[in-house]
Image (tube, rainbow, N blue to C red; front, side):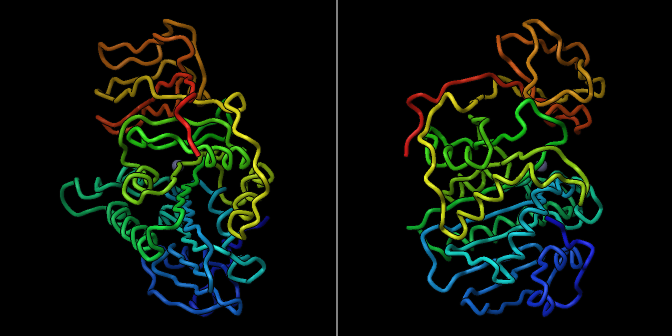
Length: 355
Ligand SMILES: [Zn+2]
């Protein structure tokens, strides 16, 4: 699979010729005048904004699916994966049976090969974009706009449809489990067995089950839109064109099967084929003396013996104090007050999943 990122197009009409929505997005990274047209197969193509593409088939089946990538601009593999699916849909190589909303989250950061320009976009949802002072950054404006686009998409579909939001990422570091999902807090509702089965077929066997509200896009999708929503970490960050797309083949295959409404029968739910974790502690950076006490290239979900010192923050020491406790998303370079690391522990979901 190749990306057409270098073949940038300059006229909206060219989208009909090339199907290169990513190219159009990166040519107009901050704004794009909306336009619409209809494919020969009856699908209505609507560009709502830069990086925002809504596809409505003539007779939509029952799923409204949001596929987002590039919320962190340098997480290229999911962007390439989504761009290729977009292109095949726009060139009518495949035809969606469901309503689709493709989002490329942070196009200016994608052009700069950076995670963000100013603010971490995935910490700004559920209204957090409006909490800062002064002139809002690009990311704050974008988070507010993306919320409105997602609400519009689901509202136009109506209430009686299955709502899905998959926010595709790659992690800064390697992981003991190459692919994993963050399952946002459901406020006590059971975890979805069919979603776990589907994502397992995508190659995601490890789930971090959140137990508190968050400012992430997936929590917004779950809480504010009533969608089955997930942050999917599909591998490690690499530059455009340097991804081994074979590592994403299962995910690509299953997303395409979902879109064209040809999902294979999924394996029965069997907890022993999954790894479930919950957050045992969130470690926030409190001083400029904050330091992590392990190798910089440590992998997510690495476990340490009881008592191991994981981090120091001035006079505070963080040690492993539960068996099986593992670290995830360590980052000493965050701003003061921000999360520098999560500690997680294995958990069972027995009695907490339902169809
Ligand atoms: Zn990310």
